Length: 116
Image (cartoon, rainbow, N blue to C red):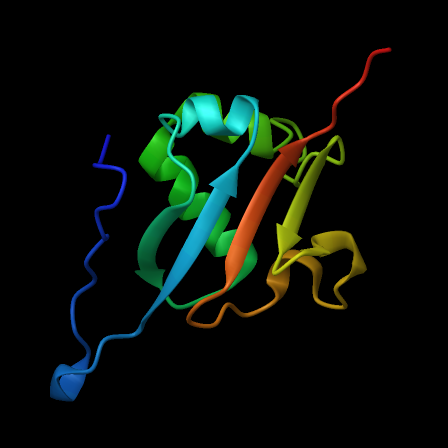
């Protein structure tokens, strides 16, 4: 597992430019525990979609993280979690998990809490 504030380096593109974005990831409850109790976690990932960022986080934090995020049968994001991008639920975004990430975006991961 990488250090909490480490940055994942990507190979530069032609001409020395990097095709990456720096984002913050905040996990609560079970997510925070699997992420090593680090919040927020600032990572630099290859530029892409919200789904690709979640997949990169799965590679970084392992099977336990993946099991929290994705349904093992459908490989879709579990509806029992709240995945927020800059405070908005991915379910309310037109592109959902296919929304392109920008530098400075914040992903927040919240498990559904029940009880009473």
